[in-house]
Image 1 (cartoon, rainbow, N blue to C red):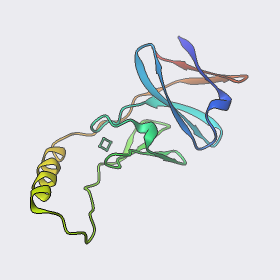
Image 2 (cartoon, rainbow, N blue to C red):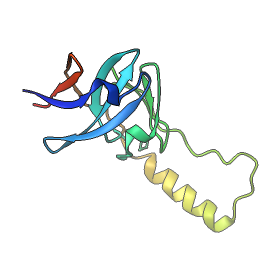
Image 3 (tube, helix red, strand yellow):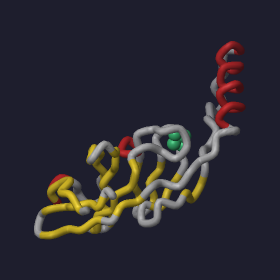
Length: 129
Ligand code: FES
C-alpha cells in the first residue's frame, strides 16, 4: 500500500533525505528528477546513508564508503579501509585500527532494500509493504 512520505519540493535533484515510515527507515533519493526509495541503514554496519553522497545513481556510505545503486539497491563496491596517508599514528591507536579492520573484514555487506515510488502532483508516495 502506497503512503505519502514527502512533497517533491523537499528533495532537490541530486539530494537525499531520511524518513521513518511505518516503523521503517528509508532514504528518498532524487536522481535526475526521479525519486527512488532505499533502506536508510547501510548494508555493511548500519551507517545512516543520507549522510553519505549521491553522485548520479551511486550512493556512497559516509562511514566506510561502500557504494550502492539506488535504482536496484545492489552493492557496487564494498567498504574501503581507512587511509591515513603519511600521517604518523601512535602505536596504541594503530592497534585499535588494526583490530577494527580485522573485525570489519569479517562483516558481510548486503544490498539495500528498495521500495516502489509514485509521484502524483507534488506528492511522493512509497509502497512500504
Ligand atoms: S557502514 Fe556503510 S560501508 Fe560500513
